[in-house]
Figure 1: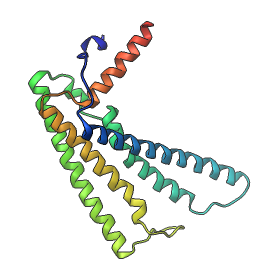
Figure 2: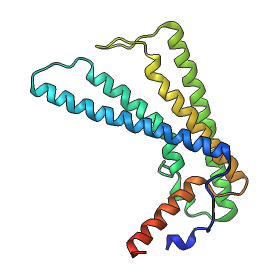
Figure 3: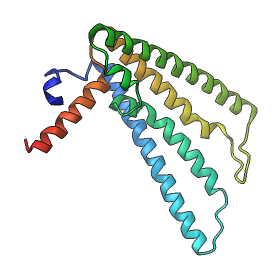
Figure 4: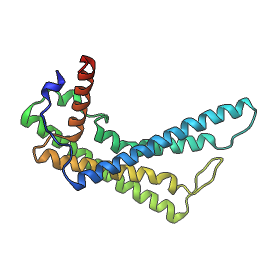
Length: 194
């Protein structure tokens, strides 16, 4: 049983910074969910408008912008909750120190990649704002506000990964692993009627 393998009393709280990162990830995840709901609403409105023979200009562009923003805003939350895609096929075969080393390596590469992407994207958005870059297509708006959620999401993902890197380096279990195991243990207890 999964529940038997969970170390009792493993805390997912490592202090104020951990709580702050968790709160920020949840807030961005909620914002991402609202954006996805906006995309769904926009699609239903567009479908209804077509039936009524009403033309909605730029709806596809807005849906695309919202979808991209929602994805980037949701990355850190998904990572922290253990629903982010990891190298589970490899990691599940490792134990002890080898598992810790592999986890540290993956978190190091992930943190470095996300930090580099966040820096590069922030510079790109800043340049678009400085040059007054506008979107192409039916709706012409300044493009930097549309791109800003990608920067915020990448920065938050880099911070969340860096925090987990430090946690694993200290010999603690990653929060995303603990949360997944707790969820699975809860599902097993629920199935057993406990």
